[in-house]
Image 1 (cartoon, rainbow, N blue to C red):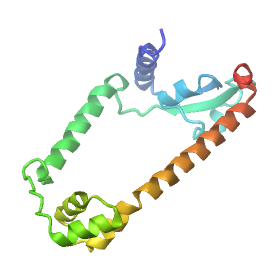
Image 2: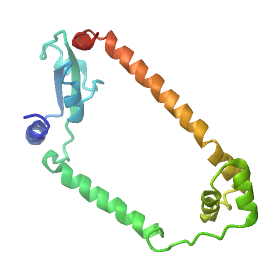
Image 3: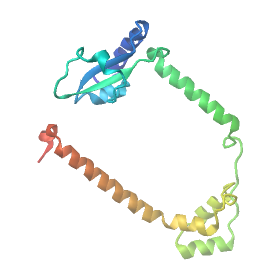
Image 4: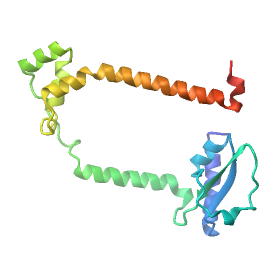
Length: 188
């Protein structure tokens, strides 16, 4: 019954009970396959609890990682989704107060001959350049037509650079996975 959120609900109920009993930390040895679950539940590999408070009370074993979760006394762990939604609505309300993006529609400036001819010479969509320059604040920020054209022209190079970076990162991750003992069923 994984992925249905039962583990999270149970953990949040346990945390709520821990708050009522003035328990400050949870410490566990997480099985190496369960580290992801414990991270989602707020556990961390860095231990802030003084060692003398738990030393000798928790069994150390191979194939596990010690993890800790601080239990904040003022958080109702069973209401976290509602608290996050309330915070989200508050932030969106504050943004709406200062934002004009939903109240004002900017009409694009008409294309001039210089923009079109310069765009064709560089191989850039002149309409896109004109729209970019029509955005209020772009020219005021110091951008020139040549800057926008150069940025648009280098998009292909940036895309290639990003693809190469992604490929190298994925190959690096694949190698790390292959180096792990538990990956033996997936090796060729």
